[in-house]
Image (cartoon, rainbow, N blue to C red):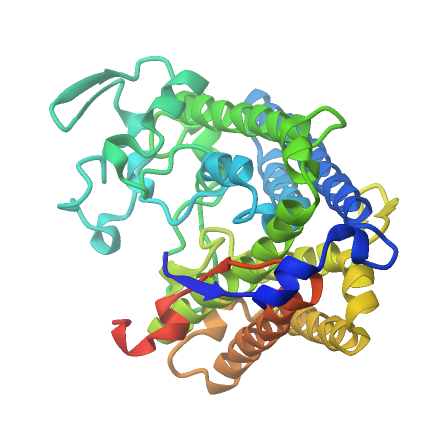
Length: 422
């Protein structure tokens, strides 16, 4: 990923210290940051466990009702998790782990049957492109025979990014999403994945074969998601490694992590790779939650997560509020005008994200908004991109205001060199 170098003023970096900041202190801000991280991941566990229960109920008693309940539980689980993505980029412990739970896009033919007219029969860069674990108890990938007779968490973990191909996504939210919705074959027209509940039916009612193995895969992927989220939640507890790393030293490394996460998610990841790229190509394959058509929500909650961290406030799924000393407080003590400016810009990006949510509620989803002939829809998506790019300019200014330096934000060719996109 392209990096954009953001340099603070050297004089400020050397003359300002944590002790020089007006209240609150850097450690107070970082404690709130860690508290929000812990709460967000804990909420992700709670909603993933609800998904786990719904999946178990589906497998035990397949029906349209139990299938719909599992899909609803998956959608609900995305809201808290997406708000945690702002903890990426600045925290190595999160970056090293994140690919297990939210990697995308994926070559879904690794997991299950696909419509090959659109998907294709093979891919020169991926020997596992149509391996179809669910249909094949024995797999041969790059000359290696794999025993897939029993589908469990160990098997799917071993297949994740097999052959070092990043699109071989065998675990996490999007593998589960595919197993619940199936491929979205509607292009930029209305409609998401059309998988039928009978893909999990028992006996002669089973459609597309291997319903028992499909159920085993779905359960294994959901169980693994829960355990992975539990592990990350533990890293942000009072004695967790992630919290300790953020709070170590004089607070400058922790503040650097906050600003890096905010700027990188805002610019290169969300504005660029997840939004502008699909708009440039008018390609529904570039949408984040492409099987369920839930991309509008995922983008909105990503933007909200950035705002949460800056304001030091997070609304939990149970309705309670986690709040405390914030980066906003720290910036305001040094440059009240910058704080006011960034608060306004963050509110604008969240509102632009909410506009996409409102359009989806009215029946026009992200893949329709980015269609080549949808000028009005394109403008809605571009407004979201513009708001994110604009707020990143103000996030850059935090660097000097709080006395950190040498920060690198994720970049994106979609924003920095759009002529190279084809």
